Image (cartoon, rainbow, N blue to C red; front, side, top):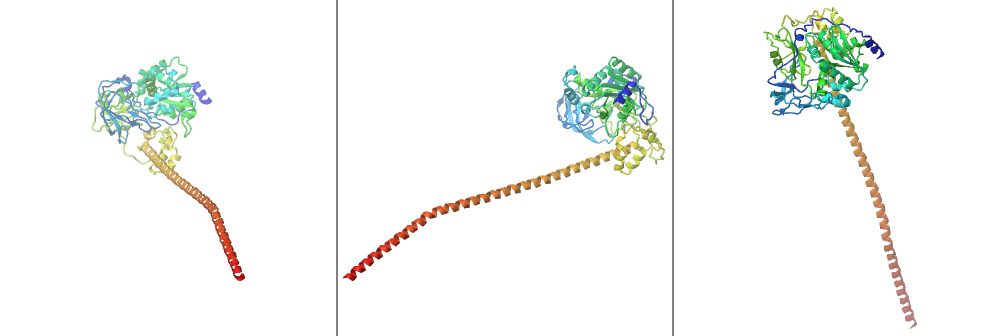
Length: 539
């Protein structure tokens, strides 16, 4: 940590390996002020909008809900509740397509807005420093806040980990082309973002805050510089424009000069990172009592006639955003959620905005041509040169195609941040990230199946041990019962023998007396007979 402190105090900016410089295309979307949209006809709220399990639904079709009312209850760790973005009627609880490349449906709550915007807010905690950290963590959790930078990890879970924090890093880099949601947010809500940063610092007990912004955002830099003026424990760092400088590990290396060790977390280095949008949402939740109901979404691309950034309620169908952006459809429409590097083509315009949706991109074919057919690798090594994680993308792709999952893990596949830099420079147009994502999913499925099998085996063994234990306990009870019965029988026999001996003695005495009396009678009779015989002889 001493080296990190020295590096930070020196005010220098480090470098990470690899990286690319794609066209930025931030304009004209970043030149237009944030605007709000009219309510859509319906809001579609998938129960799971973050990393982790979905919550348990608390409403049913026909229920009336208020804006900010809790719709789901988080029942497991890493779960987050969901709230009604506006007041209205729950028209359905059913499976709907969600914002995912697979297009697979997920259980969603569908709300028909009533236009009345009737609120059910959380109690404000304006003087948050008078609350304990557990109360603030509970507020962040109950507000349903997940990381708004793209990953969607529950913010409270990240803050709750008990390790000393030296630096809280606020990520305002937003390095992916086209996306400028955080840029506009920093320009227009700088003071509220700083308040959220300070709340996050208070909860995490971080010693200092580093706010990082890419140098292609001069207006945002000036706005945030003015907002942090006079706050000694906030350091503003301007980093050079390079993709993917907004990646967590890459930005940490630039700000601290140190790499996050393999299979470790920034937390192990005394660092924790949050996004500027997340900081703003935390401020709204704690000080204003508003759960996470909306987020800033960039509408951009050549086919968007009215590009810009909008406040989009969670659950807003993408087609509603396209109408607001005056999208002009083509014969082969392509709508991308996210940017051109890490985004994905939407399977339907009915999918909704969720907590991790930061951009809707509508490029023309000339602006962003679709990839051609995959060709054979020519072993040029360009992919390895630009990899920010210092991996061997070519080798990973071969292993992924061969389904050699053990070697993939040994080659640190999960260090890949899926930035797409390798695919961007590949002359053979190999969709490298596609192979990595598929391999990661397969490895996770295998690990999940192994875990299930191990759990089943453990349960079977536990059951067998329990049955064996119960059998031994029964046998022991039977043995003790048999011994008890045997002992009782022995005692009863002994008592019976003793009792029989006592009863026979009087009978024996009586028999002896009778025999003696008979003997005396016989003797007397014999004496009398003898006397009579003697008298006869005398006569």
